[in-house]
Image (cartoon, rainbow, N blue to C red; front, side):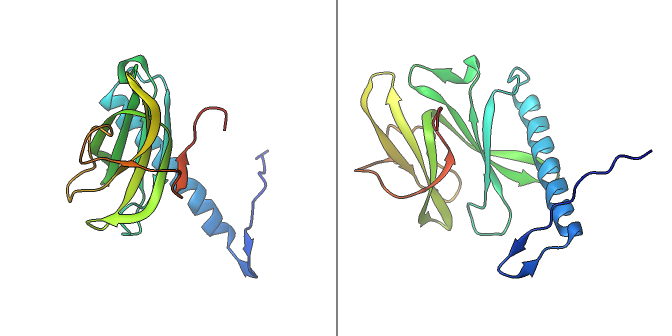
Length: 170
């Protein structure tokens, strides 16, 4: 006998999303996550699932890019770990930028450069004390690869931004 699963219908401001739309979104999310995992295993077969991902439209084209924080020994050092910015490439992904020595929080800012939203990463360790948040601005091809040197920009205070990847324990 077939098993039945509950169907969630979203209600927002009097608008009803059809069950097909909800199921489509769940399927798309599962497909996106699966294609990302496949890409990352080809990129580094030793990840063992040790990464955190966030999907966000960085360039306003209606398609989500992936921001991935890698946490395996091969990708981390005394200054932090590596963050990848990936763009969709057919059914897979393409590496746009590899940013070293990053720590969460990783945040999305409203500021834009060359049509892409700026990303904030925490920089601390490996001789950098005290820590600070660095803004990574898109240069037309990629984001800066090292947040501790220009063109990355050290931000004063605690600027507002949308949390993409939270620090452990948050």
